[in-house]
Image 1 (spheres, rainbow, N blue to C red):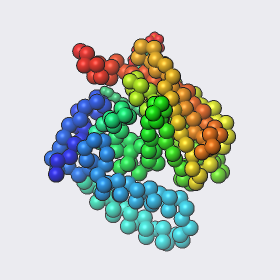
Image 2: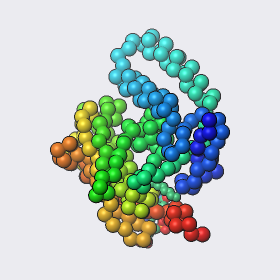
Image 3: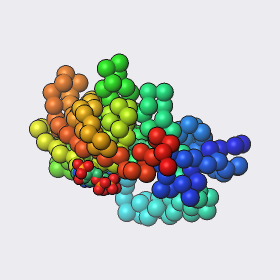
Image 4: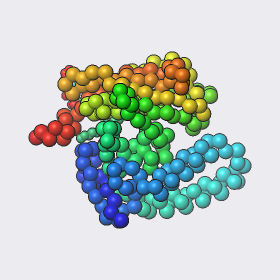
Length: 230
Ligand SMILES: CCCCCCCCCCCCCCCC(=O)SCCNC(=O)CCNC(=O)[C@H](O)C(C)(C)COP(=O)(O)OP(=O)(O)OC[C@H]1O[C@@H](n2cnc3c(N)ncnc32)[C@H](O)[C@@H]1OP(=O)(O)O
């Protein structure tokens, strides 16, 4: 099976991908393989189960030993390259290993975002208890991570893909977990390599919970890559 992977040498160059024959890990187009996605989801379920477990001490010790065996088995097949970065037809950057959207990354929700006809980024999401910060509420840093990403996607689809320079947040109401929420973001404007976006996490009726504005700066090397300049 031929699998597209970003080569290690391209780590500083997110627009490039390499390929590897027979390497376990990811399929082309920035998505994880179906099996890897399932593994990642299983690990998310495991993390939820760990956080919520009421198992007795001896059971926890036994389970930990079993998990250590599985961890060693996976570690022995560790990849030497990154998941490829790809752009979907709407221009949204995706890669299966991303910390927010990565289907193959157990750490990711994963957030599934779409581009609406008016170029808004929109993602329906539901946090879990593992995202808890203050009692019964989502950790503010987790909300910030989601907003950083959707704002970044908004500037990316507007042609200004960049690194976050500043992210300003206003926490309006506590963010609950276990309830449907909506994250949205819109591109605002650009000046040279700098682009601004704004967004929010809200209840489905639009009631804002966290509002964000961000400045994204296209690194010079990305600009050159995207325009083909030397
Ligand atoms: C090939 C295609 C790949 C495409 C791929 C797409 C991926 C798209 C993913 C989308 C969704 C991801 C969304 C999550 C995005 C992160 O999580 S990014 C991670 C967090 N951010 C970082 O780590 C950034 C770290 N900082 C840096 O790397 C560099 O400082 C920066 C931000 C790239 C800027 O470096 P630079 O290009 O050398 O900047 P420099 O020339 O000094 O300044 C340019 C201008 O920006 C201003 N500026 C620089 N830094 C800042 C700052 N922090 N605050 C305010 N202004 C600043 C300067 O004052 C200057 O302004 P002007 O004088 O032009 O008015």
